[in-house]
Length: 286
Image (cartoon, rainbow, N blue to C red; front, side, top):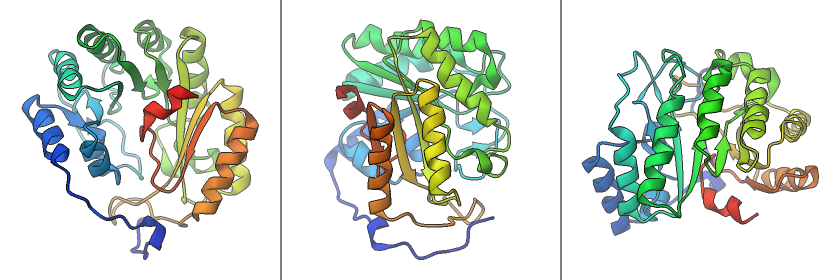
């Protein structure tokens, strides 16, 4: 299942366009010693988002306690949580003039609360410096810890996201330390705890799933109260990662978007380069 070089189709080729805001964003993040999932996960939208002076902040270090076969974030012994990080993210949001902020993290199974308090502190620091900003948090499953879910819900973010990543039949291969039903419960329970927050999830396609399985996953998400959905093409970060089984055609992504709308999702972004936080502010208009 490890990646074998496969020629990308034309719709997965992008041109780099230089923009002065790219360096500005990189300089602010570097000055404040902040990490982004954009860089750590080799996101294909990295330059586009940085050129718009936006980024998805990644808290709690760069070492993940899990080792999923699709992800480029480094697996290893995690760093000690930095108590000053939430304030620095608040400062970055103010400097960049963001209107919608996305904060995620590595998975920290080593922490009693999975890092939930750091999420809550970060939301508070962002709101303290930029009161009108919409805040979206993309959380791990916290090992099913309900107290951790209480903590993140009590911080009252505008959007709480948890990515299912793939269909149920592929979990053992794609997310070996996660559980499909547990991830669904996370989405359902955060919605119960924070009913005013919008709920969101994201999946990758091209890993060998069937169309019927994707539709079944949509049904499960709607049953859990999920309102926003993102669907994007899986791209192997390296030859050491899971192989791309199929490059999904753009018209299939359009079909998935139409199906999701019919199933009742308030907002769906479905296209080859879509990632869970790509143009996230657009969902808030739904």
